[in-house]
Image (cartoon, rainbow, N blue to C red; front, side, top):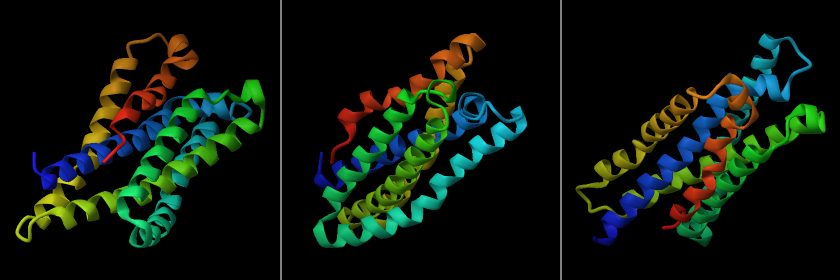
Length: 197
């Protein structure tokens, strides 16, 4: 496989994994985070608070793109992409290991927000860097195609997140709240071996 295609494949796979991890958070926020991390509130308010933590990732994304874009220009895009992929994987795995409000109190939602900020920050750096690196390695007549292919990682990530939660919906409510919701986050450990360029 040529270097151009290797970079394209790595960009697509990395982007799909990053977006998968970004979207599983949104699904979990709407299904379980209100009950586990905001149980002191009315269920509707708890769900809205959980979804507001999802929004934190979108606020952190542009900041990550500026920071990692700057350092990518100075230190090299490949090293910045590796850093962003590892950051996302660590934040996602730690979210899956996070104790609930009933175990550690107010620290549970605080840590949840911090981990979500790290996810958004790293995605902002990875996504732009992956598209840019793929376009830079493409031939002059394939730049639009290569950029578009990496861009499809958003859709692939959403599809994977939906499939995983669809499979977990077969669990009983008790099992899903106890451990099932953690499975997509902990699977980030398995994805770790693919986090390289």
